[in-house]
Image 1: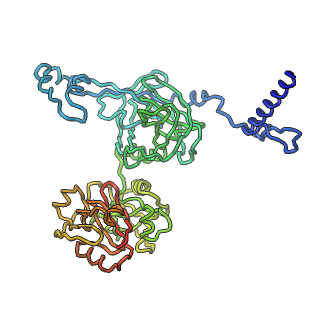
Image 2: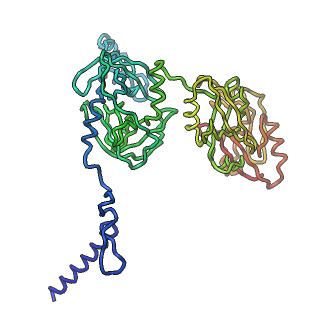
Image 3: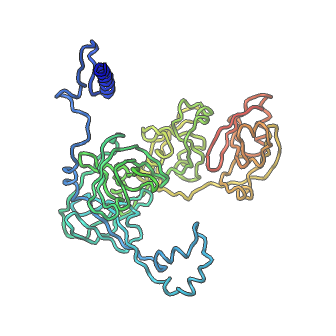
Length: 492
């Protein structure tokens, strides 16, 4: 009986194992109950899904093109120990500053040499090296060490802080440096294998492998964020080094990590870098196109308000007077949906598209205005972020049946609320429990339209409300600081 029971248990175990193997794709039932067949990839004509057998050939081929970058920056203030005591967290002056200056005054004024490490890669035979701007920024001395242990001084050809890219030139008469091939980051797929090579923590020629974890990541580093996320190990010192596909082509430039995260690194797509590198190589600086508009993404409420079928497109919040968009006839509340035949889906995409257009060249913009599609030819200018529009109006105050008190915009009110909007009326009070309160209207909101009727003054606002019958729908088109434009729906 014991033996029979053992047989039975073993039988159940075998059955359970076969079930797991079947679910895992290791064996497949033939459906007849009489046998099992192997999965498709077990046949000789189909490759099994597997990790690459080795990255050594790729590392050997590309390794000589990757360089170690050592920089030295000159700082004043006696080094990191004294700087630690000079300021409190948050940048406030330390009350003990006078004490340290009295007893360590001479020491605190001494120069301090701060070394740092990074990586880069050679893109042509004469020795141009691509790296990150933060690797060489403010450096007094830059040295590049090659795979063969030879070390050279390097000069900065150009920097672009907006994308954190820099181009160096090795000071050498050689015209036969090893060169890495630049790939196409647009062809990368999430889950694809990638390899990083660099000098993390000064450990030269370190090779790590992983996959593309995500694309198009925005991490708040600048207006052109479009990072490749990878779990290939990236650490301090990897900055500026290449992220490679399995063909040994550079598809990204390792740039950032999340300090508290493990296995999360970010690389600049090589397609974004190519244009920047070309401009730095040609003239030492990057010139970007400028439309002269303030923009924001289109959300669901805005799409419904303007009768757009999808949320794709970019809303023009303001047009700067005298700039290209203004000269071409673009107006506030236009929705840009296409640039030179390419669909526009976000502000970040529009900013990148326009930035890539040469200054002086015309761009064909397709916009939606009052439900109709219009086309404009805009002559692109050089980007200038300092341009804003400013207007003022006489103050008025009045309560309304929605539970709001509004005022005209004046310089004093704009200063009080720290805003730059120049048209509309500002909400200065929301009655607790009112319809406006329940709908989410806030003090400081600027009402730009009521049911598509433009609001330029408190009088305009009151007249627009009078036209709406009792229990009628009220759509407030507002601007909110740190949130942009919103549509709030309520009933009168």
